[in-house]
Length: 295
Image 1 (tube, rainbow, N blue to C red):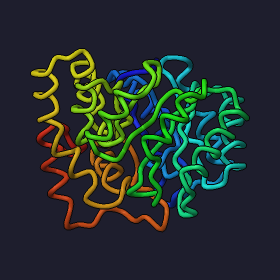
Image 2 (cartoon, rainbow, N blue to C red; image 1 turned 90 degrees about the vertical axis):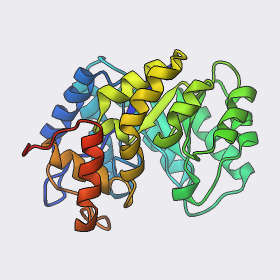
Image 3 (cartoon, rainbow, N blue to C red; image 1 turned 180 degrees about the vertical axis):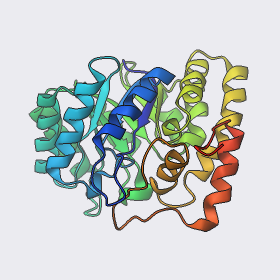
């Protein structure tokens, strides 16, 4: 079972919005050197809605090739079309991903039975470990705990990224799910609490900019070291909150640019961070001892 801090890595882009593959290589090396336990490529934070299909596949291949087995690679392959999700998941397997992360179908708002049938179809079509991704605040659809438990019975559905932020729901899942089914937090602000009650890690936005601290916090929380986990989380908490002052990944890409790790590129309809939020993010960086490229 995979556990620890998995970065929902951004997709570096030049100022014109084109992919910056050398910067992605550098980011991957940065994360591995800082202790990140795995790379999640082309998820929501990686701007999956606005990369073309050929770019999506190229980003998976680039990541798998550059990681070269040093840490697990989880590919985002979710879609609101079941057939498209199957094709992306097949491609991810062919390209060498270790697992896939599939966001709930968005906008078309399927029923719980529709969600079950969607994920069941993908799992049966592609023999690769698959992680459900529930983020109702963005998708407009909520995978219920009952549906998650039904899906957990399918052998290659191995976990869920729960971004509801509800510790009550997370507790229910941890109690009811099979022991080999992993519950990962998709909400950085409540991630530590979820791990302290049995969650197996985080798929994290904050890890983009503070990978070492996120790794150390996960190790402490998963092992039950409450004092250490709380102390690290306190350093990170402003980032957990303020990296969402605008839609993700706008703030995190701005911080990474301030760190000198990526260019300013982001794709429409997203635009760069509003000037009004710059001081807020700089303060959160300071709390976590993150330096800017000019400091």
